[in-house]
Every structure is written in structure tokens, then in C-alpha cells.
Length: 126
Image 1: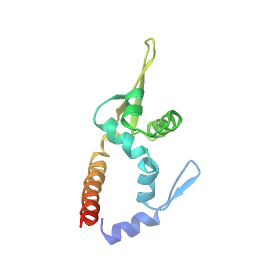
Image 2: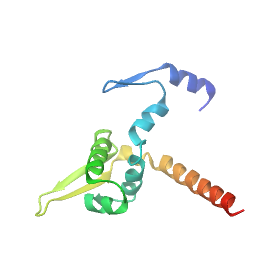
Image 3: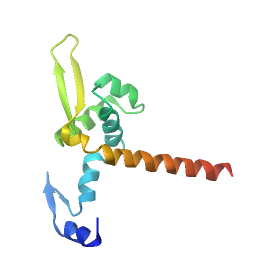
Image 4: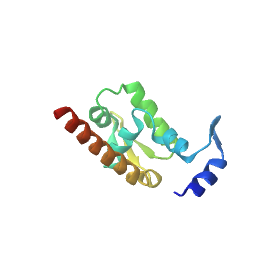
């Protein structure tokens, strides 16, 4: 994005749910920022996931936080939730078409993280 485009984008404000966003980066971080949202989106983008599978894939997340974060991702149109009428009930989360557009963002985050990890590892070895 050019400096001119950034200036234009910054001059327009978006308000939602009482929050005021002054840059597109703030909007992005609201949707996938925080400790768990990007991690969950990363796993769900790989294929449909059940609640229990996500809990296993993301060690350290509590059930309450997993539920809350999935609800926020669903509210923002990143994931869809399907409840199957079975006993016991089965709930599956899928990436939406809109959520799939995050794939290049998540891939870039993975690439940067991998490079950073290698740089830190190399600097602690020497």
C-alpha cells in the first residue's frame, strides 16, 4: 500500500459495537488479534474442526476462552458453526469464504514467525 493510500485509509473511520477504528490494521487486529484468534483460524483453515479437537490442538486454552473466541470468530464471519443433532451433540467449525481470505495473512505470519524463530535460535547458539 502506498503512503497516499495509507493516508486516505487512515482518514476514514469505522465504528462498530462502540469501537472506533482509525486504520485498517486496527480492524484486522480486532478480528484476528489476541492470543488465540489467529491460532484457531490457522487450525480451522486446515479443515473442519470439532470443539474437542480444537481444545487438543491448542494446549493452554481454557474451554471458556475457546468458546468465547470461537463465538467472536463466528460473529466476524471468519468461521461457521454447525451443530449436528446427535447424542452426544457434535459441533463442527469451518472456515467461511470470507475467513479463507485470511489464508495469505496467516501464511505470512507463519513465514515471519519461522524466520524469527530461526534468527533467535541462531543468535543464542553463537
